[in-house]
Length: 457
Image 1 (cartoon, one colour):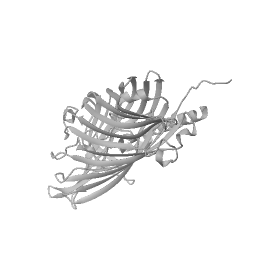
Image 2 (image 1 turned 90 degrees about the vertical axis):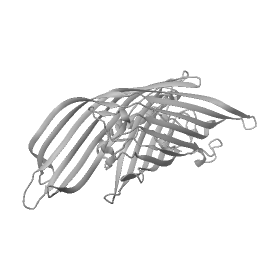
Image 3 (image 1 turned 120 degrees about the vertical axis):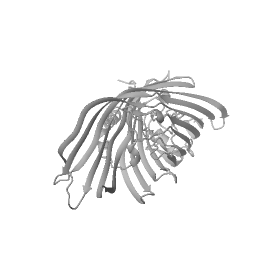
Image 4 (image 1 turned 135 degrees about the horizontal axis):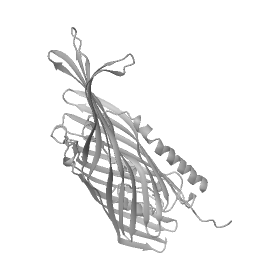
């Protein structure tokens, strides 16, 4: 037991400290990440992604075939944590951009960590749990070239950007019978670096290349909260098989308060050339200003959901059989400000439906019968509004929760591999640029009970 726990701890520690390195090697090109603080994806758990994004009314940790995961989207779910739990996730993201004018198509791929989290049961009998972790919230990564003419000469503009927003969080959840309440707090921090490179092409006159750019660093504390309430709507007792079937409804509500992130910005205008290695080398600084202090106003958001599920209590334990749910989320991005400047953003919303089914976890006769098969659908309006026509989003998802070993191989340990495949599209015929996306995610949930008293010396 101790050796397993120590191995899990070391594995988790290495991944946490490797987080910045993995992020730095992401390769992506999404022009929509130029707006706001980039592609904002909330850092959802892979279980939620496979069910269309359902998170507000989701919680696990009490059934044998689900194991233990950390639903950091709603901290009220921390009250269900009854074992030490490690959660990690990785995502492979593929995007295909299509432009109407000019006609073009471009595909890029990206590999990034999704989250690292640790859950701790503070008091199992009283339903008190704690969780903390690190996850990215948004990503900025684009490189776009525009060719045209100015003053009779050919001109090339190269627009580049990198950075994003991350979240280091800690939270607690407490349960009173069917009602749970929880809070997350911590630090959000990030960086936004953007630049425009301009090159004139002329056969007779030589013009110096110019660079105009800024680098911003920002951070702030945040506070979010959530509630969940679950109740039984039907119970069926079968004495012959010694099983009890229950149908339960769980309601969930979670929200995030708006915040003002303190920021500093460096601005530079200069001329440059490319050296023999292709590296930008400055010739002369035209304008420079450093350590400009400002504020980034982040908007508030909320999510409300409902889930209906069936469980079976059998001699072998408690099992989730199936679940169905729906959720609505909204964020007031019209209130976003970047150094007192608005951006091409609009209020966003998303409607999600999803569920899961485990064909036969009770009998234990089939390994694949105990696997959780998940599915979902989502549609709504993205927060980016580059051309004033809005940006619709639609997509679907499916995935599996695969136990590495059967639940009765040992009493206190669970290891579940969670997978998710998301696919969809941003934009429609009203937009000049549309983006198709394909995300394949893998997560590992490791659970163990620590500090078990010795029975014999």
